Length: 243
Image 1: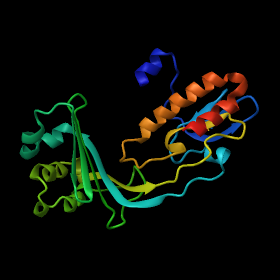
Image 2 (image 1 turned 120 degrees about the horizontal axis):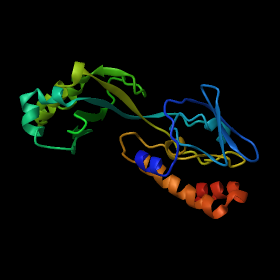
Image 3 (image 1 turned 180 degrees about the horizontal axis):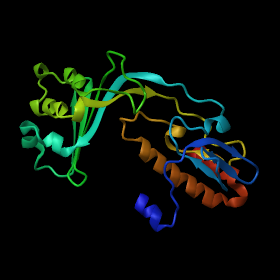
Image 4 (image 1 turned 45 degrees about the vertical axis):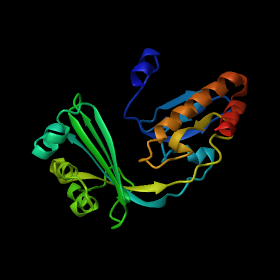
């Protein structure tokens, strides 16, 4: 998608933090942390559950509710994983590999990417000890995941071996939280509109968030094209209704 956006001549800037969204009768605006302000006929807030656009759209931000589950996640150098003979025997011939393994109250997603030389695993489990947080920076020992895949319940040794190869025995410890979808997705004048997890969030393990955001984008583009610049508010209202 990034390469396609470049082909279309769409400018993309990284490492910018949004401070606030605002609007007038003719434009939507985004203020960035460096003091600069972006504007457009319509501003699309696609910045997730913590979107600053809620202050303008509804003045209400959905409270997180525990799903009762948490997730360990690790991405690390492939050479560290392949150093274990058991792991190497199972995965060395699998290129661009992705698998999902499901058990009682546990499922594991495993990805191996030879081109990027990375190994990745995610283990979703019951949030039994309440140490996890809804944060991509909260870490814990990867070996803590082993108790959720005990040999006594028939979990394969190569899975346990993979967890043990995690670099520095460190992984993300992410609490999975529910949020209710918001009924209103656009600002009063229709110049700022939310898509994706900003307005109807999914659990990050569902594999649905980015897909829904792309569907939102397609719907929004079609509605704005039909409405035209003179009826932008109607266009975003119809999009909100349809989605």
